[in-house]
Length: 237
Image (cartoon, rainbow, N blue to C red; front, side, top):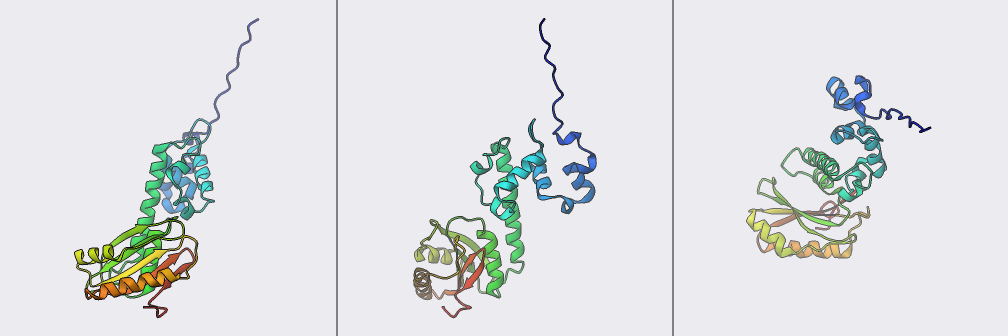
């Protein structure tokens, strides 16, 4: 006798089978985005899961890649995200775009006033810009006569332990932006806030070169996850 294969119904992993109160989209609509967990918010971005996993389950796996830390998650590449079964390029790009929007929002909120008044507000702005960088990056803020930031530019990106900034490039851009003062900045991915001898020498080189164009170097700020170091606050300028 020919055996008959019994087909079992597929596991109902799809969110559409859930109670409406538990579905992320409906939950956001009815209760507001602040009442959703990180995994539920990411699940909305994913739109749907796979036959084996719901979008929320996939979202939890994505969070685990970053040790359930959104800052660490923001440092992952598209290839890192695509290591999860069920996350293709399109979903990875959507997640990366959402994380970048969050980072930009934080950066803009960190410096609500366009006028630079203290190193702390500038450092928070720079930390938001550079926090997802795994390599050392050199940034310059170009300020006008009213101490308002006209332009922010990444001058160079280096390796894990250092980067080199060319004073000629910095001053050329300063003249193009009609800047009267500059704030130099770079990050230390290692977390250390102690300036190196090379950092001090570079700062003095840029300061001396800028003086010929009546441009003032207001500060050089080093940022990391541990905080910030201000050359001006420490009397090194």
